[in-house]
Amino acid sequence: MIPGPDELARIDKTHLWHPFTPMREWCADGHEPLILTEARGCVLRDQYGREYLDGNSSIWTNIHGHNHPEVNAALREQLGRVAHTSFLGFSNPPAIQLAKELVDLFPGRKLSRVFYSDDGSTAIEVAARMALQYWRQSGKPARDTIIAFDRAYHGDTLGAASLGGISIFRGSADACGYRVLRVPGLDALDFLTADDLARIAAVIIEPLIQGAAGMRLWPQGMLRVLEAWCRRTDTFLIFDEVMTGFGRTGKMFACEHEGVVPDFIALAKGLTGGYLPLAATLTTERVFDGFLGDGNTFYYGHSYCGSQLGCAAALASLRVFREDHVIEKLAPKITRLAGLLAEIGKLPHVIETRQCGLIAAIDIDDATGLKTGARICLAARMHGLLTRPILNTLVLMPPLCVTTDELAAMTTALRKAITEVCG
Image (cartoon, rainbow, N blue to C red; front, side, top):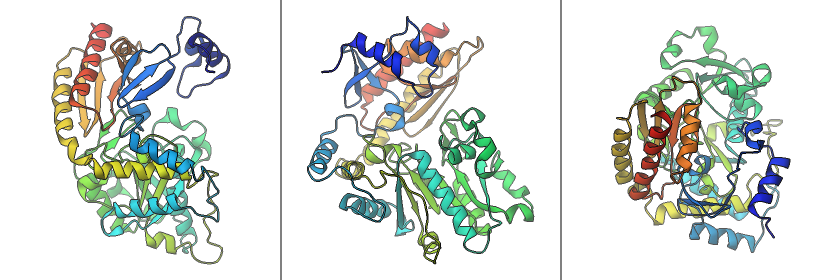
């Protein structure tokens, strides 16, 4: 039997440690933890039965809404067979089927190999390790450096964090991560010396938009220019589509907007529709062939790689994309969101609004220095909206199943919260 709301809160404060959460404030006597107990579609319900719209897709993961009947049924069916077996030296039908479907999503099946892991950070670790090991065992060990961009975010595991360009997220990774050359933008690549180029193994980028940087948009056409530079210098190109993948930008993948296929692509978050931890790193036959020689095994893997339940959920999610024509239905929602953002942009204290598909950002003037973004999101709860800020950038990233009426309700909640907090 589940304890009552007050007892749940007491146990939480006594025993849990939440990520990205100031725990002194969380554990304070006056703080009431928000404990989510149920959900359906875009609506979440807390321990007291209060309802909220899911304004950040449960940290950018949920795609088709909560409690989706197709995904639920796929998980129940898979549970009737087996929940999990090892993927190290073994295989299973859902993992095999999912690999083929993922490969088929890219033109010409240029990304022909799929390596499973657990989350976005590990998907990035796989790509980075593969790129570095490839050059080392191909007779070019000097190619030991990865180019990353300022203000990038690629995850929290040690290697992935070292690639990031936001110091608060790097922690100890500064001391012992990958060898990284961090650049502000494309122009910096033109100033690399011959000695620099001889050391570059790969370039990694969040295509179209940098998430943790405050939903910062890249210039249009950047991916095509970057791809041309990588081909010219024989440098691997890694796309981090952990956030942007599976429809967030208006197409299945952000790289489709510029017709670019990288050498590696990291997928997670929305891969299972937001149901279970599962990640996939796709790469080319060239990279795979580089690991076929004696002693070239890729020694990396996790206990739950290729999880049957995760793969079953992902297969169901892709089926929903096809059968419900999810991508085709996004255009009117994206247009509606643009109009709603334009209205918010007229408010005092709103510096700028940005949009990439169904990803929206609102920059708030924080002249008071009193964590305005966090206070606005807290105020928005009282108007039935849950989302999280990035400092003083308000982020709105609903599930793709969101209706235009729900988008209007979400932005109305933000407008009211901004006005209440900022005046």
